[in-house]
Image 1 (cartoon, helix red, strand yellow):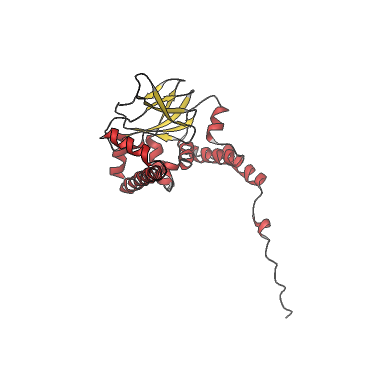
Image 2 (cartoon, rainbow, N blue to C red):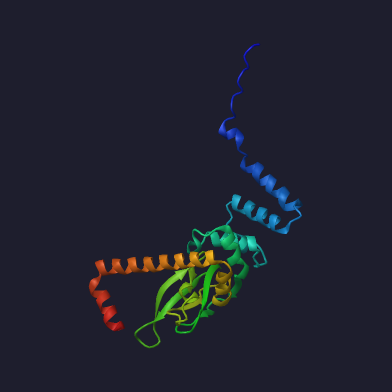
Length: 228
Protein backbone atom coordinates (compact mmCIF):
# COMPACT_ATOMS: atom_id res chain seq x y z
CA UNK A 1 0.00 0.00 0.00
CA UNK A 2 1.33 3.48 -0.83
CA UNK A 3 2.42 5.47 2.21
CA UNK A 4 -0.09 7.95 3.55
CA UNK A 5 0.64 11.57 2.88
CA UNK A 6 0.83 13.39 6.22
CA UNK A 7 -1.62 16.24 6.67
CA UNK A 8 0.09 19.55 7.31
CA UNK A 9 -0.92 21.06 10.68
CA UNK A 10 -2.87 24.27 10.64
CA UNK A 11 -0.84 27.38 11.23
CA UNK A 12 -1.61 29.10 14.55
CA UNK A 13 -3.28 32.01 12.77
CA UNK A 14 -5.63 29.56 11.01
CA UNK A 15 -6.76 28.03 14.30
CA UNK A 16 -7.86 31.32 15.85
CA UNK A 17 -11.00 33.29 15.22
CA UNK A 18 -10.64 36.82 14.00
CA UNK A 19 -11.89 39.77 16.07
CA UNK A 20 -14.81 40.17 13.65
CA UNK A 21 -15.79 36.50 14.00
CA UNK A 22 -15.65 36.67 17.80
CA UNK A 23 -17.76 39.84 17.78
CA UNK A 24 -20.30 38.19 15.48
CA UNK A 25 -20.57 35.13 17.75
CA UNK A 26 -21.02 37.33 20.81
CA UNK A 27 -23.76 39.26 19.02
CA UNK A 28 -25.60 36.00 18.34
CA UNK A 29 -25.38 35.07 22.03
CA UNK A 30 -26.59 38.54 23.09
CA UNK A 31 -29.64 38.28 20.83
CA UNK A 32 -30.58 34.61 21.20
CA UNK A 33 -29.40 33.04 24.47
CA UNK A 34 -32.32 32.38 26.85
CA UNK A 35 -30.25 32.93 30.00
CA UNK A 36 -30.10 36.58 31.08
CA UNK A 37 -26.69 36.31 32.78
CA UNK A 38 -25.17 34.70 29.69
CA UNK A 39 -26.52 37.52 27.50
CA UNK A 40 -25.15 40.13 29.91
CA UNK A 41 -21.73 38.44 29.99
CA UNK A 42 -21.60 38.28 26.19
CA UNK A 43 -22.58 41.94 25.92
CA UNK A 44 -19.87 42.95 28.41
CA UNK A 45 -17.30 40.82 26.56
CA UNK A 46 -18.23 42.49 23.29
CA UNK A 47 -17.70 45.94 24.82
CA UNK A 48 -14.31 44.89 26.16
CA UNK A 49 -13.41 43.55 22.73
CA UNK A 50 -14.18 46.99 21.35
CA UNK A 51 -11.93 48.57 23.97
CA UNK A 52 -14.78 50.21 25.88
CA UNK A 53 -14.23 50.40 29.65
CA UNK A 54 -17.13 50.31 32.08
CA UNK A 55 -16.82 54.03 33.00
CA UNK A 56 -16.88 54.89 29.28
CA UNK A 57 -19.86 52.62 28.75
CA UNK A 58 -21.82 54.32 31.55
CA UNK A 59 -21.15 57.74 30.05
CA UNK A 60 -22.77 56.53 26.82
CA UNK A 61 -26.02 55.22 28.25
CA UNK A 62 -28.86 56.73 30.22
CA UNK A 63 -29.23 54.17 33.01
CA UNK A 64 -26.52 53.75 35.65
CA UNK A 65 -27.67 50.43 37.11
CA UNK A 66 -25.00 47.74 36.81
CA UNK A 67 -25.66 44.06 36.30
CA UNK A 68 -23.87 41.52 38.49
CA UNK A 69 -21.68 40.58 35.52
CA UNK A 70 -20.70 44.23 35.00
CA UNK A 71 -19.84 44.59 38.69
CA UNK A 72 -17.62 41.50 38.53
CA UNK A 73 -15.83 42.72 35.41
CA UNK A 74 -15.30 46.13 37.01
CA UNK A 75 -14.06 44.81 40.37
CA UNK A 76 -11.51 42.61 38.61
CA UNK A 77 -9.78 45.78 37.38
CA UNK A 78 -9.55 47.33 40.87
CA UNK A 79 -6.16 46.78 42.52
CA UNK A 80 -7.74 46.20 45.94
CA UNK A 81 -9.34 42.98 44.66
CA UNK A 82 -6.27 41.78 42.77
CA UNK A 83 -5.89 37.99 42.90
CA UNK A 84 -9.51 37.27 43.85
CA UNK A 85 -11.30 34.54 41.94
CA UNK A 86 -14.40 35.15 39.85
CA UNK A 87 -16.48 33.27 42.45
CA UNK A 88 -15.18 35.52 45.24
CA UNK A 89 -15.88 38.63 43.18
CA UNK A 90 -19.38 37.33 42.44
CA UNK A 91 -20.04 37.07 46.18
CA UNK A 92 -18.82 40.65 46.70
CA UNK A 93 -20.82 41.92 43.73
CA UNK A 94 -23.99 40.50 45.27
CA UNK A 95 -23.75 42.94 48.21
CA UNK A 96 -22.11 45.89 46.43
CA UNK A 97 -24.53 48.83 46.47
CA UNK A 98 -24.55 51.61 43.89
CA UNK A 99 -24.29 55.11 45.36
CA UNK A 100 -24.59 58.26 43.26
CA UNK A 101 -23.13 61.49 44.69
CA UNK A 102 -23.68 64.97 43.29
CA UNK A 103 -20.83 67.43 42.74
CA UNK A 104 -19.47 68.78 46.07
CA UNK A 105 -21.56 66.28 48.06
CA UNK A 106 -19.81 64.94 51.15
CA UNK A 107 -19.38 61.16 51.12
CA UNK A 108 -17.52 60.66 54.40
CA UNK A 109 -16.90 63.27 57.10
CA UNK A 110 -13.51 63.33 58.81
CA UNK A 111 -13.86 61.88 62.29
CA UNK A 112 -17.18 60.18 61.54
CA UNK A 113 -17.62 56.39 61.63
CA UNK A 114 -17.66 54.91 58.15
CA UNK A 115 -17.47 51.12 57.89
CA UNK A 116 -17.85 51.32 54.11
CA UNK A 117 -15.41 50.62 51.29
CA UNK A 118 -16.14 52.87 48.30
CA UNK A 119 -14.95 52.00 44.80
CA UNK A 120 -15.28 54.74 42.18
CA UNK A 121 -16.99 53.59 39.00
CA UNK A 122 -17.26 57.01 37.38
CA UNK A 123 -16.39 60.54 38.48
CA UNK A 124 -13.81 61.98 40.91
CA UNK A 125 -13.48 62.00 44.69
CA UNK A 126 -11.20 64.23 46.78
CA UNK A 127 -9.71 63.14 50.11
CA UNK A 128 -8.82 65.98 52.49
CA UNK A 129 -7.66 66.42 56.08
CA UNK A 130 -8.14 69.38 58.37
CA UNK A 131 -5.18 71.77 58.31
CA UNK A 132 -3.39 73.27 61.30
CA UNK A 133 -5.12 76.61 60.78
CA UNK A 134 -8.80 76.75 61.63
CA UNK A 135 -10.95 76.25 58.55
CA UNK A 136 -8.05 75.11 56.37
CA UNK A 137 -7.72 71.72 54.72
CA UNK A 138 -5.00 69.67 53.03
CA UNK A 139 -5.74 67.71 49.86
CA UNK A 140 -4.42 64.17 50.33
CA UNK A 141 -5.49 62.67 47.02
CA UNK A 142 -7.91 62.95 44.13
CA UNK A 143 -9.24 59.57 43.02
CA UNK A 144 -10.87 58.62 39.72
CA UNK A 145 -12.45 55.48 38.24
CA UNK A 146 -11.07 52.24 39.76
CA UNK A 147 -9.81 54.17 42.79
CA UNK A 148 -11.10 53.27 46.27
CA UNK A 149 -11.14 54.57 49.84
CA UNK A 150 -12.42 53.58 53.27
CA UNK A 151 -10.97 50.06 53.14
CA UNK A 152 -9.54 50.23 56.67
CA UNK A 153 -13.01 50.93 58.03
CA UNK A 154 -14.27 47.51 56.96
CA UNK A 155 -12.84 45.82 60.05
CA UNK A 156 -11.94 48.82 62.19
CA UNK A 157 -14.58 50.97 63.87
CA UNK A 158 -12.24 53.93 64.35
CA UNK A 159 -13.40 57.25 62.80
CA UNK A 160 -12.46 58.21 59.25
CA UNK A 161 -9.05 59.91 59.04
CA UNK A 162 -10.00 61.97 55.95
CA UNK A 163 -12.99 63.78 54.56
CA UNK A 164 -14.18 62.48 51.19
CA UNK A 165 -16.38 64.46 48.80
CA UNK A 166 -17.36 64.27 45.14
CA UNK A 167 -15.43 66.65 42.88
CA UNK A 168 -18.03 65.99 40.17
CA UNK A 169 -21.09 63.77 39.83
CA UNK A 170 -19.75 60.39 40.94
CA UNK A 171 -20.98 56.80 40.93
CA UNK A 172 -19.50 54.41 43.49
CA UNK A 173 -19.91 50.81 44.50
CA UNK A 174 -20.23 50.63 48.28
CA UNK A 175 -19.38 47.56 50.37
CA UNK A 176 -20.74 47.91 53.90
CA UNK A 177 -19.13 46.20 56.88
CA UNK A 178 -22.18 44.28 58.16
CA UNK A 179 -23.11 42.32 55.00
CA UNK A 180 -19.42 41.80 54.23
CA UNK A 181 -18.75 40.24 57.64
CA UNK A 182 -21.82 38.03 57.18
CA UNK A 183 -20.38 36.86 53.86
CA UNK A 184 -16.99 36.06 55.38
CA UNK A 185 -18.71 33.77 57.87
CA UNK A 186 -20.34 31.87 55.01
CA UNK A 187 -17.24 31.91 52.80
CA UNK A 188 -14.06 31.51 54.92
CA UNK A 189 -11.83 31.67 51.83
CA UNK A 190 -13.14 35.19 51.18
CA UNK A 191 -12.19 36.19 54.72
CA UNK A 192 -8.65 34.92 54.23
CA UNK A 193 -8.38 36.77 50.94
CA UNK A 194 -9.51 40.06 52.48
CA UNK A 195 -7.00 39.63 55.32
CA UNK A 196 -4.29 39.11 52.71
CA UNK A 197 -5.36 42.27 50.86
CA UNK A 198 -5.40 44.39 54.02
CA UNK A 199 -1.99 43.08 55.11
CA UNK A 200 -0.62 44.01 51.69
CA UNK A 201 -2.00 47.54 52.09
CA UNK A 202 -0.38 47.85 55.52
CA UNK A 203 2.92 46.63 54.10
CA UNK A 204 2.72 49.23 51.33
CA UNK A 205 2.06 51.94 53.92
CA UNK A 206 5.04 50.75 55.97
CA UNK A 207 7.26 50.85 52.89
CA UNK A 208 6.07 54.38 52.16
CA UNK A 209 6.93 55.49 55.70
CA UNK A 210 10.38 53.92 55.32
CA UNK A 211 10.92 55.88 52.10
CA UNK A 212 9.91 59.12 53.80
CA UNK A 213 12.23 58.36 56.71
CA UNK A 214 15.12 57.88 54.29
CA UNK A 215 14.48 60.99 52.18
CA UNK A 216 13.02 63.48 54.67
CA UNK A 217 13.84 62.31 58.22
CA UNK A 218 13.55 65.75 59.84
CA UNK A 219 10.00 66.33 58.53
CA UNK A 220 8.96 62.82 59.58
CA UNK A 221 10.34 63.29 63.10
CA UNK A 222 8.26 66.46 63.43
CA UNK A 223 5.14 64.50 62.45
CA UNK A 224 5.80 61.84 65.09
CA UNK A 225 6.52 64.52 67.71
CA UNK A 226 3.11 66.09 67.04
CA UNK A 227 1.42 62.68 67.32
CA UNK A 228 2.99 62.12 70.73
